[in-house]
Image 1 (cartoon, rainbow, N blue to C red):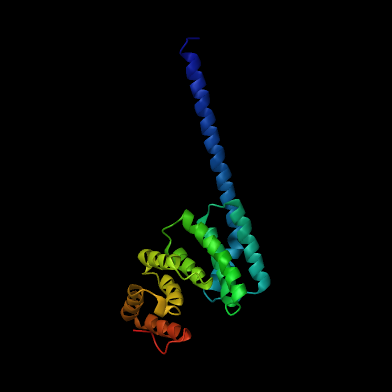
Image 2: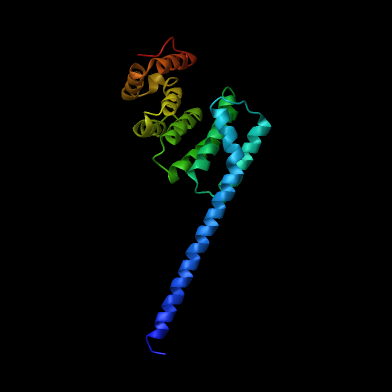
Length: 215
């Protein structure tokens, strides 16, 4: 055997080992994704229906959804989608308990943690920023962090009706405390909106104590 053959065989063996390790990791990761998807699928289906108003939820169903999403998140903790779903799930409970400040803040504090985790993994997600703004408002954190979340949501997704609707849920009740440019943004969106959305925005404003949309 030549002197060059031994190092070459060692190199080849090393390459084979690297390939095996990469293949093993890919297989493991694929299995983890499948397990997480399977664990979270019923919860995601239910939560989508609840958020879109297609179905009502009960406490037991909410708990089942939470357990399924937490199980999936434990399998793939770096999945921002699961963090988004968990944030929305806790926010849903917080909205139901809105008049009870202690419960509202408790549920929205949980939502806040998941939304922040999601944004660390995927920072250019406009709905996550608008949902973060709602959680900050719900936990009485009306300062630079709230304004930053609002501005990021606008910059990344002002064309998204859901983002706009969530931001108005924050801007309208804090209208006099908001900077002039954010109030001007909301007014411009109202004036430029199609008739159906303008009507929905007026109703949203009336629910926040306005006679009509502020202009």
